[in-house]
Length: 328
Image 1 (cartoon, one colour):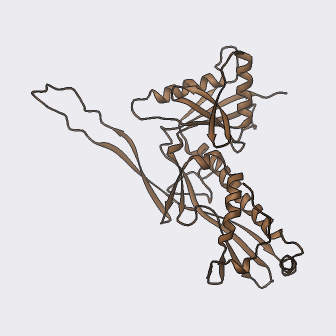
Image 2 (cartoon, helix red, strand yellow):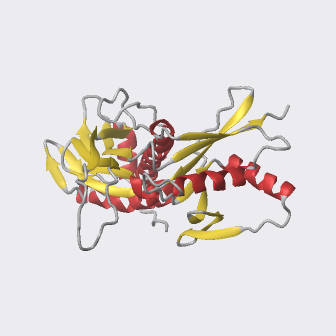
Image 3 (cartoon, helix red, strand yellow):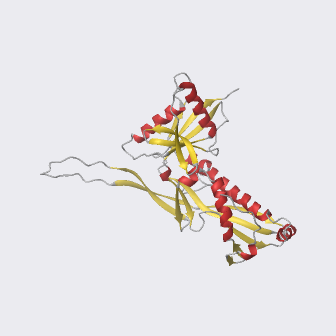
């Protein structure tokens, strides 16, 4: 879905004037278009939860005692359950911002119709930049703690998920990528201490390409499954112990090229346990006009308050790393 290019007449659409800051609701059309084009599948498929405070909390069940047993129906006895072990966790909302400036001369030219679409195009690029940053941070954000953050950005999945496995460099006897993924998912589903229900497999496009090459080389009769990820979007899928799971490719998943081999991360995740928390009213960027400053620059600032949380990082998800020999 696109948008009709027309000059934005900001003087007529300001919704709030509070302390000389103006909010522009008609930017919502541009924001929706940007989000449709620039957000990842993970952003669209994870849970979204509004928050009213800077710090938010959630509870994770870490285990429960197993005391159920069969008894004589005429002499019922039981052992008291020690209860479910729960762990309370907390995190804080993170801020994100971007800005465009116009000098007085350029602003006057835009207003007079010389460059009627400049402001709208610049708004689109500013908001696209924010969407691309947030979606990249979902995977590779380098914060190390939810409760005691040390970085401004998110703690990405590659840092948060602590359950890991490896797929060695390909040899005659080493498992193929697809086979290793299926075996790992079977191990997850077979756990009796926790309910694991992976819903998708995420990888870099180059990782998927390597997997497809392996399958074509080793089994020319392998069956190719497809699955509708969203209306109009169909992806390859793999049949696993958890059912048919989509293989979602995302170029934001980084491949480590620094060592002797290429290290390809493959994320097997339960998307229902990936949550994007946002401040009420800021589920998407909000654009403010800050007014003219001393240098006669007009500033437009986009802000957003959110955080991206991985629940049950040690149980519900797995990061598999595939080592691939570099081609000389």
